[in-house]
Length: 283
Image (tube, helix red, strand yellow):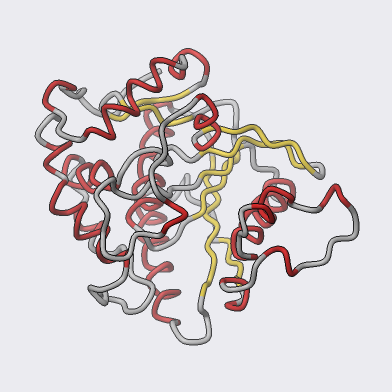
């Protein structure tokens, strides 16, 4: 469709994971099968016929960059697509500072793209959901029972995200629901979550990036463009596009505004900052 950058020299990329993902996309024919724009050759699902799209906008670097890229793509395509940012308040009892950070990121994007970014849609995740398995819930019929989540011993937190996004897509008539989460680094950090370890890429992994959803009257595409790559690519593109001021407003840590320096999210962000040259040097 079009590229927001000037391309990338794949021979100069020092990220094994990024190279694997690009090879995987070529192998499964991603570029021919899905509407998209590219960012220095990397594809982002984008269908100009979808005029109302949603994005899970946290205060994190990943979803913030994705929102920025989508806005730039909408401008370049000269289409009238509107973005509805959806924000979850988490651990709300003790960290209102995080809600303020999420508001600050939203306001920055809304100031940059007032014709594209719509009202921030807030919802709340009860803290107990973060620790309670889905298997503890009762369901009124088999159709609504999330068997896959129960089998993987998922927490209600994940079920809540999925259910809310499906409802929001139906209620606000959103054609695409974007998520900006990335995969964890291949190098193991001090607190890497076990359930987010790397796996060999197979054909089914495309569903991590683009998946059509038709459920309970909702009909939309679930898109997670960064779902298979590491955070170094994300951080590198803040430098590339000259938007480090926007990066400075983002918050990765869930414990303190400026980072505790000890949790996985702080470790991952520090790792990405140290390794962004693996991508940046090839741009």
